[in-house]
Length: 247
Image (tube, rainbow, N blue to C red; front, top):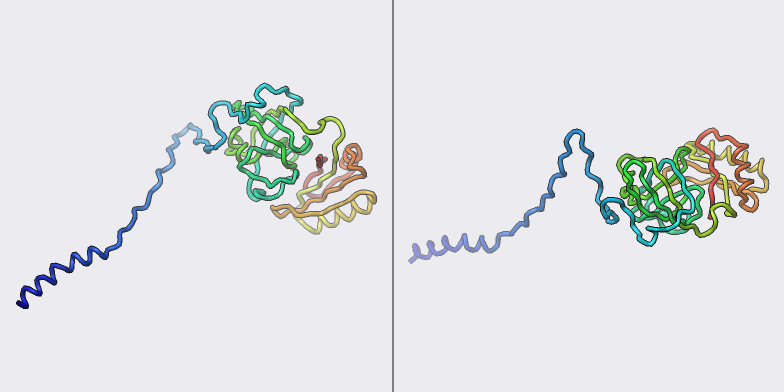
């Protein structure tokens, strides 16, 4: 009797332990990136705006009249400016098709074409920059991906201005911007000199998201000619001097 009872208990143990065992989900291992052989270009970053071939994002501007054309170097920007306020008051989204330009009216519509690859995209000017002397336009990350600027960092492009809220040639509000200055004391000293020299101007010193310092000088009536004159008659120990449109 006792022997039969012991056999029954032994047979029940694996059944009970099986019912209490945890089932572990298998981890999904992503596929390895595609192999790039010597001489091949690396694969481009996928984009929700990429429609293949010549990338134009808005058929509305397909046959639009070109108001103004510029040619020069494009670069791109993302972090640490992502989710910060842009010059037009909107929050900058590096995944939207926007760009920064120093002198085009804010909210202008521009077609950007990479002169090497012939890829193009439509962007809206929402910010000011780039503040590098040999650069024409700073693209958002999404726009840079669309026109093959993201990986190399810079590329020669053509800008076709298709729409501007105010006139390009007339009016506007203008200022002078000096920077980036690495040393805060140097920036403060330069600001003091400018305040003493231009008593009717508004001189503002501020830090950028990347930690350098900038000085903005707003002349009387934000006049373009006065801003250009001020820029021409000054030098800076660090950084560069730019005439920038405010509106």
